Image: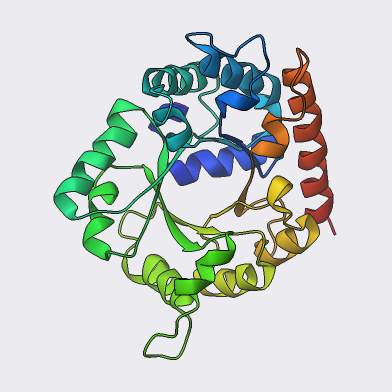
Length: 280
């Protein structure tokens, strides 16, 4: 079967196996931190991300462009070009558009078209706090991944995610149950759970079984790799179950002309650390 016709989960399973990696490289291109040779260039953001993608493609299970970093610079065309490059050159590696959309159903219809038809992403991140009718439009796109915010890596996430619901459990665990048990009609839902809270990763894993988890928070945010992998591993299937993202630590490993090689070096050491942790 052609990799383009696979579902998001099938793509992930294949990438975990063929790449031997749970690492996801996130693209958060800040113009102020680009190498001087690319600053001010009309397609500098695209060139920066493309070179890092090409340098790290054999080390990852996924790529994750962050929409706001492109949109704020009027670089949506460069985002389209980047995802096309990724899909043309690395069709076996799923692309997640990180946009954290969350709006009423009619508007969500258009956000889904934006992510899947305009940009060609394999999955998109969404915010569940307006309920299922804001998630449902994404599920109508056959085979596409819908990655629901559950327990985020930022400190302020606890302001709402730890609030107790009627059952007495925190809201983030209620979201995990809804996403895995009631909402997952397509079989393509995943959850975002931050590496900065490994105990919560373990609690979510106990609820959702082998559902994939997108885990930000290692690298610049300081999440512990060993604790993260131990908490999120799938019993009997080491090296699978998690899309563990690192963005800034890889992207900005060097501000010089060697930025792509430096990014590769950090990505490789991170991939190797994740492998070692999953083997323990």
